[in-house]
Image (tube, helix red, strand yellow):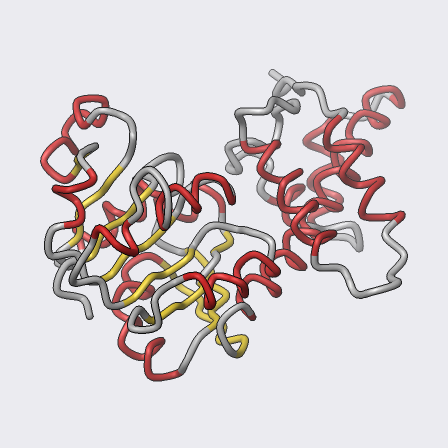
Length: 273
């Protein structure tokens, strides 16, 4: 199953994940629509040629941005489900609507195993190889894939059958999005109250307001960003929308929608000198 591992989508998350796999001695290469030359010293590991990437590929790890790019990787422009004749397993690491993920089982050929493994930890977690993976799939498949997860991460949560990882991830990210929206609001209000950001954050860290964004504001690469369709704040919006897409029938979605709207309204926040 791990004879040739390919990481599709070598951006902020995919590139350090690929580096971790290679540093662990695993036979991994990367595919991206960016030219290999844009990866500097990483050029030998990269290709933008789908046929080259697909040759001998047995394990596809997809880390692309959204559903449209996932469709391209699996069925469209790259179409690795048919292009890669030796493909045995697909690992979906992107955070996508659980409804979409579950439906992949009827779209992907039966001989290809499917595992969903969205991760948490942001870019810094990928670089430091301490990602947390939320895993969905058969235990035998997860056992076989454990070496790749151990290369890239530190915590591994088996949530159930295929699609369970996606469900757990969007719920986790819905909570992270709420923390992001409220922490940024609190810091803006603190400015108006004349409070020093670092003093307030130190207080929050040791008090009941402690949360992921407040604790990691100097490490999380997008913590101070405003919304832009191309940045990671936009991915957080996408994650909230993925949770909304899989909300229980009849659920009150007012609060998640407010969280989404607050994130859409974020403007850049400078780091105090």
